[in-house]
Amino acid sequence: MSITEQVVKIAQDARQASLAMARLSTTTKNDMLLKMAAALEKASAELIVENSKDLAAGELKGLSTAMLDRLMLDEGRIRGIAAALREIATLPDPVGEVTKMWKRPNELMVGKMRIPLGTIGIIYESRPNVTADAAAICLKAGNAVVLRGGSEAINSNLAIATILRGVLKEMGIPQAALSLIPFTEREGVLEMLKQEESIDLIIPRGGESLIRFVVENSRIPVIKHYKGVCHIFVDQSADFDKAEQIIVNSKTQRPGVCNSLETLLIHRDVAAEFIPRIAATLAALGVELRGDPTFCSYVPTATAATEEDWYAEYLELILACRVVDDIDAAIAHINRYCSLHTESIITSDYSRAQRFIREVNSSCVMVNASTRFADGGQLGLGAEIGISTTKLHSFGPMGLEDLTTTKFIVYGDGQIRE
Picture 1 (tube, rainbow, N blue to C red):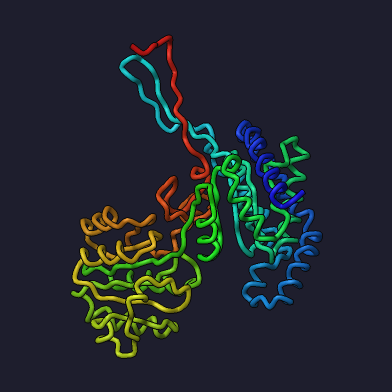
Picture 2: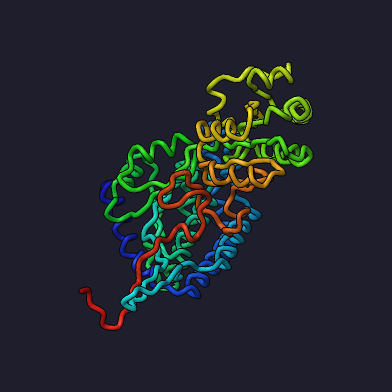
C-alpha cells in the first residue's frame, strides 16, 4: 500500500473505533489506563532498547544536548509516564455529563450533554512521553486518536504505541482507537491533514514552524497557539515585594516555555521607585533588559527596544520593558502585541483588577499571580493536551472537557409543534 492508502485506512479505522470508544463506561476507560500504565512499566527494558536507537540516530544527526535529553527514556521517566496515565484515570469523566437543563412553556425538557469529539489527530515533536500522554487524555474523553510523532523519536513512539494497543486488544477494545502513523515521510503528515471525513480535530504540539505548517496545509479544524508573548503590568497600587517575586518567577523559573514572561509594563507613577529595584534584581539573575526611552532613562545599561521586541517570544533570559501612563495604556499595549496566551496585573486596587480581567482579550488573565500558572495541571485540569489561543472551540489550557463537545437532548411527552 502507498503512504496515501495507509493513512486513509488508519483514519477510516480510527473513525469506526471512535464509535466504540464513545460507548465505553468510565470504569472500563479507567481500567484501560491503569493496565496501560502497568504494561509500560513492565516493558521498561524493551522501551529503553528502542529509545537507544533514536538516541544513537540523534547523535549522528547532530541533535543538541537539550534535544537529546528531551528524547531520552530511562526507568525513572517511564515510571513518570505511567504515573501520568494513572493520574488521568483518577480524573472525572466528562462524557455524559448534562451541563444544563431547562423547561419550555410546552413542558419540553431541553438540555445539553457532553459527548466525545470523535477522532483526534495529534502531530508532535521530540518527546516520546507525548505518545502516551496525548493518547491517554484522548481515550479518557471517549475519543479515538491518530498520532504522528517526530522522526527523531520514531522507534520509541512505535514501541509505546504497540504496548498501549496491546492493552486495547486484551480488553476487546478496537486497537484502531489508538493509531500511530508508522513512517516519517512528510507525505504522511500531509495526507493525515486531508482526512476531514475521518478526523474531527488536529492538535499540533511543537514549535511555531510546525504549527504554521499544519495550519497552512490542514483541511481539518486545528487547535493551536503559535507562541506565548506573556505580559505583566505593574499597577500604581502594586505591592513591590509581590511584584518582584512574581516577575522573577515568571521570567526566570523556566524561560524557555510558552508561559514565561516576555514583556513587563510599569505604571509611570511608580517607575522611578520600582524600575531601579526590579532592574537590579533581574540583572543579578542574568536577564538582559530591553526598554523604551523612559525605562532606559532609569536603567542606563538596558538596550533600546525596537518595535520587534514588543512582539517577541524570546524563550530565554531577555525581557522587554515599557513604562505606560495608566491602565488604559497597559491594556491597549497588551491587546495590540499579545499572542492571546497569558497576562497578569499586579495591583491592590480591586476595580482595576476587574477592568484588567474584563478588557484583556487573552485566554488566561491573572491578578497578582505568576504567568507560569498558565498550565492545565496548575489550573486544576489534572492533565493538559495543549493550549489554545484560538477561541473556537476552546480557549486556553485544554483538559478533558475540551476534548468533548455538547449535543442537545430533549425529553417530551407527546408534544408536537403547532
